Amino acid sequence: MRVDNLVIGAGIAGITLARRIAEEKGESVLIVEKRNHIGGYCYDYRSKEGILIHKYGPHIFRTEKADIYHFLSRFTDWYDYQHKVLTYVEGQYYPMPINLDTINQYLNKNFSSEEVLDYFEKVRIPCNSPGNVEEVIESQVGREFYEKFFKKYTEKQWGASPDMLPPEIVARIPIRTNRDDRYFTCKYQGVPADGYTAMMQNMLEHKRISVLLNYNFYEHRDEIEAKNLYCSAPIDEFFEYKFGKLPYRCVSFQFERHDMKYYQPVSVVNYPNEFDYTRITEFKHFTKHTSDTTVIAKEIPSDKGEPSYPIPIKENLELYEQYGELAQERKIHFIGRLGTYRYYSMDQIIENVQTMPM
Ligand code: UDP
Image (cartoon, rainbow, N blue to C red; front, side, top):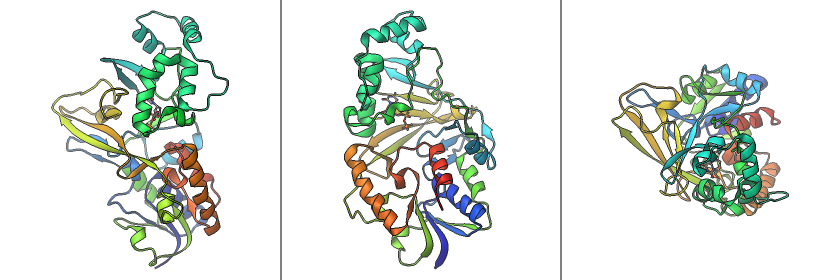
């Protein structure tokens, strides 16, 4: 089979790119996807109660960029959801990110915003240029808050010590001295009204785009000849691990149905310390679904399974560079979290794909 443009992977990166090729270049594009569904890790479906379930963990769209929001808005309406997260520490729920209420509740104080700044000044461990997760957090809130709210969560999530992990990993989590309890403060925020899968199905509705599901590219490598090849699958796998395996963190989900209206007060509760899971998501909160039963998922990180997060520690990034150079030599374009080995959020993936040279 000969095609102009071949995209490996029907996730948000591959689908955004296919749409761009079809519209901007006016060329045909084939997406091949090894799973039996489109959407990649953003895939969602309705449970028997009609709740939209995010099969691969909670996805909340947010961006500061109007053009990215407007691009997606061509394919979906939005449910105006503002993400709230609680974290469970020593038997109590606390607002996460840490804010004035978290501090006062944990310390059993009644600090004002100014007083909490004085408190941080006393406990913080100063550091001129924090170079890792531990330093970033300790230099803001000191050892105790770091240990209770971040240390073990980060170890569980990444399978690496926080002093090995780069500051960017927690850059998305602010420390607040006000009472704002939103997880994100981006200008545009929400979940697609009818789900991510429906949104992405709409993105694929173009006469120049076709999709093959249940199609593992690596089993058919010699069958497709493509003028341009774009890959959102892990880059090391594409090059048959030529320079060695790139570590990716995997996550598995334990789904449970409960006969109750709500299992927990908000959509996501983090469990930094005890338990092998990092968080529990209760999906009905995303769209305020009203049903007498509820569905939750416990999220368990590990080394085994489908690659999900790149682990951006120095030696991995150096290994990635070798693959990146090979990709340039061979003129193959890598996109998305797994292809570029970057801890991107959805809007960053879209921006990256929309601004890359084609
Ligand atoms: N994090 C933490 N404690 C928390 C929440 C987050 O230590 O209660 C750290 C952890 O290292 C995590 C990172 O902040 O991987 C980013 O968290 P986020 O919720 O954005 O992760 P994602 O949704 O991308 O998995």
